[in-house]
Length: 411
Image 1 (cartoon, rainbow, N blue to C red):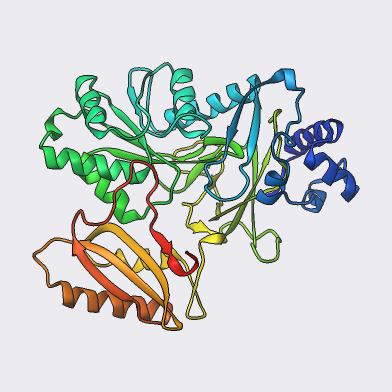
Image 2 (cartoon, rainbow, N blue to C red; image 1 turned 90 degrees about the vertical axis):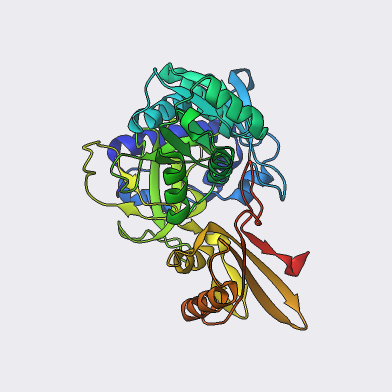
C-alpha cells in the first residue's frame, strides 16, 4: 500500500521537527542526507528505526517537542535491556484517546457500557490507554488494574460491567474462575477487548464460549502510542488501523524490502502526527500482512491480518527454526486438549530437548494422546518433541501475560 501525498506531507513535517530538535532520529536523518522527500518512491530510502536506537536514546533522547510541552512519559514493558522511554505531549495523549475511542466504537461499545479495565497502570501504556479511550467515549470506567481476582469478580457482579478489557491470559483465568464458582448467571459481560499478547483461535473460542461474549483483538505497542492503534470489526477479517495517524508498511524481515499486499512480513510503522517522540519507519518485529481491498463493514480504514508472532519468536532447536504458531496449529487439531500449552527447551547430555505440556480432562488416555500429538508435531517441524499431557488447571495462569515458551538453555 503506497503512501499518499497527504501522508507524505505529514512525514515531511515530522522530519522537520526531528531535525530541528536534534533528537536521535533527526541526527540519523541528517547523517543519511535525507531531510525531505519529494515523492512516494523516495519514502523507502528513509532509514529504519529499531528498538536498539530507542534504547540508545535513553532516557529522553527521543524527545522532539520542547520539554515544557511534555505532559507524560511511558515506558516499554520489556524485562530485558535498557528501557525505552516515550514522551507524550497533550495532543499525543488526546490523539491516542481518539484512536482508542474509535476502537471501542468499532467493537459496538457505547457510552452506556460499563468497562472493567484489568491491565496494569503506571509506566505501561495498557491500563491508562484503555481508560483514556473509555473516558473519550463517555462510558463508565471501572479501573481495576491487574490481579485480585476475588475483587474483580465482586465488582463485575455488583456493577454489572458489560465490557472486559484484559490480556487473553487473564480473560481465560476469569472465565475459569466464573465457571468454577458457578456465578455465570450473575455476570453481565457482552464484549471483551483483548490485547498485549498473541492468542490462538482455540483460546479465543474457549474464552468466547465460556463467557458468552463477543471478542475483539486490539493492537498497539508502547513505542507507537500504546494499545488502540487498530482493532478487528464485526466481520473479524483483520484489524482496521487508523491511517490518518499512522502509515504501515510490511517488509521482508531479512531484506528490508517491501512485500506485496497480502504477503506475510514484518510490520513497520511511521507516526504521522506524533509530537513528543515521532518515529519514522519503526520496525515492530510483529508479523502480519496488509489485507487488500475494502472490508465488508464498509469502513474506509485499511486492515492488517492477525498478528502471527514476532520475528524474534523463532526458536532454534536441533538446528531447526521453530515458531510457536507452528505448534499452536498442530494443537488446534486435537479436541481432547484445551487452549493452554507450554513449551520448555533445555540442553541435556549434549543435545537440545523440547518438551510440550498440554492440558486435558481425565477421561482420555494421556499416554496415547501424548504419542499422537508428538507424531503430528514431528510431521510439522521435523523432529519429535517430548509431549506431556497434564490435567486441566495444572499449567500456570496469569493476571498479565503468560510465558508460553521457556528456554532453559541459557539460564
